[in-house]
Length: 359
Image (cartoon, rainbow, N blue to C red; front, side, top):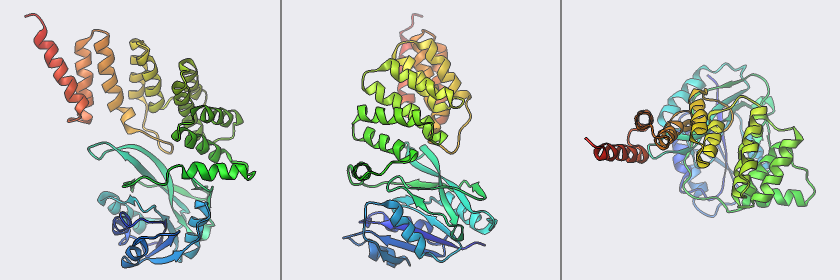
């Protein structure tokens, strides 16, 4: 059985840190908590749960803090979490199995990261992250924000998902401030950082600037394929917000030049034609979304493989005058989310339509 050091960086996380540590402390052999300036009970909560606490002077660099945490670890493998992450009970069992059976030749393990959920608790937005890695393999975080570790050596995927259960908003504009500080100081952003700089601009409502950054990122030809596909969708969203609907469609279709369409892209294109009233074309793309496999690695919205296209097909067929098909599509959506308000609304609508029909 391998041994594991949990490595965390924290600041003022008294409301969530205990929950996080309670979900994993029986699964790891050492807990390293690096505090970057807390003024609440964060350090006390960490020590109560057996953590070794270190202090680190914040320098606007998440990688520097995370790498410092790695440097304090002593066990065979390094495992990192944020304070508002948890391992749910099913994930705990899977992680325990991973710990008990992992071949020590494996240098990195990628785990799913669930970051958004529907009212029923089902993930609506997920992607893979590098979570568990051999301490002696020299892995380091890179990037002042949106930091990541570049995989190398024998890398596998495992199903023990980490769930991001955010309780409060982070510091507004922090990531954008750090990136623009780097730019002002003359640092050249690498492709990943350029992509995330554009996304930060989007999050802060600076759509025109974001579009320019995304265009430059795509033109550079240096991005990771998952970021490239994401950039096409993000560029489409920027252009749509800026009133450039043809340009938005152009950006979506550009994604087809890089890889076969993912379900998310099909839904985006379907929505574009739906909003134009081109319902037959929208049907084509929503039906294509239903046929696409679930992709791993990049940003993934599971609802795009089923629930969203079924629900949109319901509306499309209704607009096209085919009530029977529309109702059938709504019932397909219901198999995935039986008590969803939209499904119930549609059922009421179909019931009223039937009552209004002449007998």
